[in-house]
Length: 150
Ligand code: ZN
Image 1 (tube, rainbow, N blue to C red):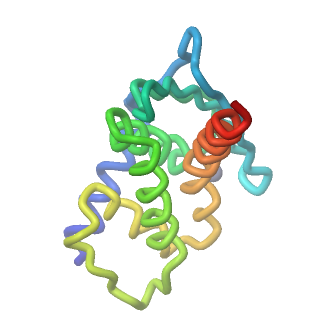
Image 2 (cartoon, rainbow, N blue to C red):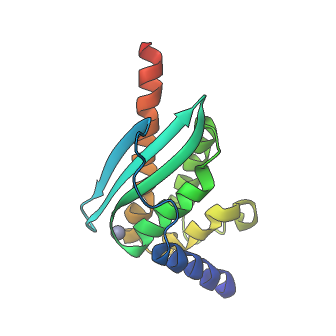
Image 3 (tube, protein in one colour):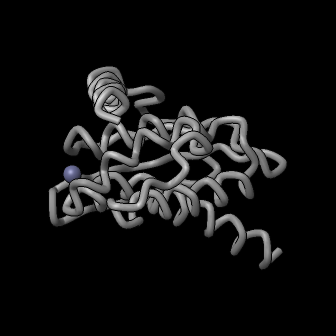
């Protein structure tokens, strides 16, 4: 398990150093802003949604390594997915970071989300890791509101 942990740390460091999809979309369908006062992380997310599919997703802002890496990994997981799939992944992600650290959830079935298992060992960091996801969900929920009023 230590080797896995080291691997996840490498992934987080890499995404922090070279964040993927970092920037601003020129005309996003949706955008949202999130702030984690406990750590000072601030993030802005822009999403292009077309026909229920996340066509593009970018983030920018400033924060700690975990918040930045989490946002970066999230964008790589969600571009090309449907909004529904994104919501399911959010539920899964949320389950991972809030699970009891003693319970060894089926890491094998988690795929890339397994990187976030390590976060459970740092309860104070859960909010950092969740910030991008919560911000994105705020943006996507706005979409369903928009749709339902039409
Ligand atoms: Zn943070």
